[in-house]
Amino acid sequence: MDPRYSAQDVVRCALCRDAVAPLYCNVCHTHLCKDCVEKHFSDKSKVHTVVPLEQFLSTDFESKREVLRRDLQELEKYIFPKYQESAAIIKTQKTDQLKHSQKLTSELNKQGEALHREIHTIIQRKQAEIDEMNAQHLAAIEKQEDETNKALHEIKQVIQDLKSLLDTSDVGLVSKYRSRIAEFRKLPNKLKISLPNLLPQKINREKLLKQIGSFIPLSIETEEQGYTVLSPGAESSPPARPLLDVPRLITDIPTGYRDLYNLSCLSDEEIWTSGRNEIMKLYNLKGELLKSVQTKSGNNPQDIAVTRSGGLVYTDLKDRSINLVSGTQIQTLITLRGWFPHGLCSTASGDLLVIMTSDDWKQTKVVRYSGSTEKQTIQYDDQGKPLYSSGPYTKYLSENRNSDICVADYDSVVVVSAAGNLRFRHTGPPSTPGESFRPRGITTDSQANILTSDMYKHRIHIIDQDGLFLRFLHNCGLQAPGGLCVDSRDYLFVAEVDTGKVKKLQYYK
Image (cartoon, rainbow, N blue to C red; front, side, top):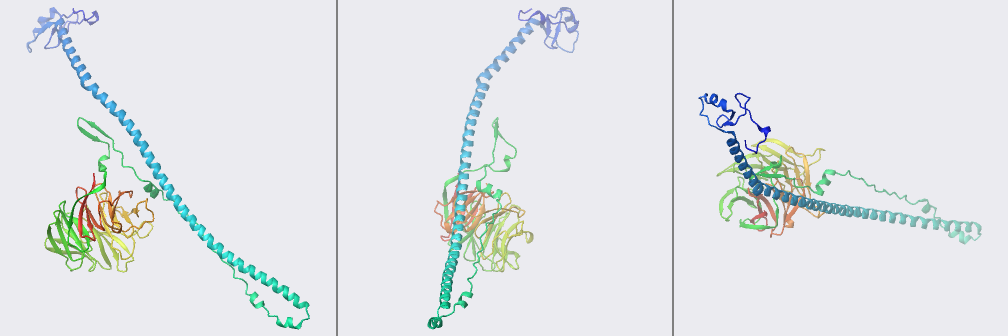
């Protein structure tokens, strides 16, 4: 027997189960002794191949050695280096993660310091109010005090004079006396001072958290054999796209409007526009006029929007109507009573959202329509207070990709959920408190960011879906931006009110 096998490896015959088996059938994989070979061959169902066991073991040993050599080669040349590379990447990732965590902590501390500075500034301002009130009150008290002391001094003098007159027999002096009792009976007015009280407001933790900022959701990915497996839930939000430091002007289109107010994307290549006349115009990106439509009443359209099916809808403030342009036909969908329609938008579900004000300009509401049927009214918060400002101000709105309804109100952007619950108000970036903010046009993009134009400051605000201010678009030559819309590739179209131009901007990298 091959010396590589010990006595403990002795194999017995599979048939007689007694004798040592020096033979092996490669077909049946059976160990045999010499006496049982003939019996094994009696099974004619197979063509048996019986070889010496040592030969089989040697062949099997060499085949196993070949497997070992191939495994060793693959482990050394391919698998082990890949694991080494992965380990090095993990080490780098740990270092980078630590650095990024430290950077986040630093940014969070800076934001905290900024909030502390803002709070300190506000407290100083309130302290100045206290000092001013104190000075006013003290001046009033001191004036009253001076008048009272003066009267006391005069009364004392009169008392002394009276005593002197009573002791004298000089008729002339007594006859010159003039009584001042009526004057002194008019006692000094009692000074009433209403001392101010501080009415501390309950700290709104949710608003404070929004002021601090929010983190872009963590996304953990593993790569396996060329495809990516995302962590659960990662597909629900689009990957964050970085914003350009300086937006890039792609093209500008002159429209001929004296005042260009509104626009809406029919496609990535065609834009509907409207301004201060009764004509609505469709342009392509070359600036070619493709179509012109006059409003049914001859009035200026208040706002325009493109429906999911490609139709054009517009609001007519003067005759209180909402109209659909289809081909050469104009159909009045809705005529309001007691309300003026302002901005409108077409939703992902095919509904229309319209913001409107009452005849007396004291009420504002958003109404959802399915066709001409009113489905929902959004007007008050959960405490019964108006969500939107009153007054004769034009208001516009847009639906976000998370179904929030975003309204450009008189001095803020008001965002409510699809159910009409207030989510937040944006009144301008936290770095410029107290600065006037007059939003006009409003739109949203694929990242659920909200863009609104600040016409008088010639800039556009970008905030995220939770109200966090991201940045301005202002260093790209914008002049009096009004209406806004975003195409399917997140290119921004801006209506410049004063120049009558439509500008196409790239603002994502």
